[in-house]
Image (cartoon, rainbow, N blue to C red; front, side):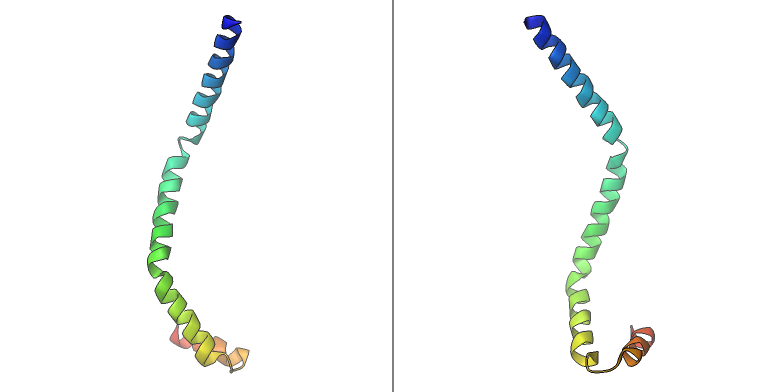
Length: 74
């Protein structure tokens, strides 16, 4: 019984080590993605202000005029 528990524990440790090794390369990507999310969060208020002003002021116009305004002014 004790030997079986030791073998099961060793198997779990081996699986955990394999998982840690497999995910080791993801740290760089996760760190970069976290920084990108921080940048997006810092721009969120301004992006919402621009979007709401666009909807408020350009909403009544047709699609062609809105596309022209986006290309020219935004």
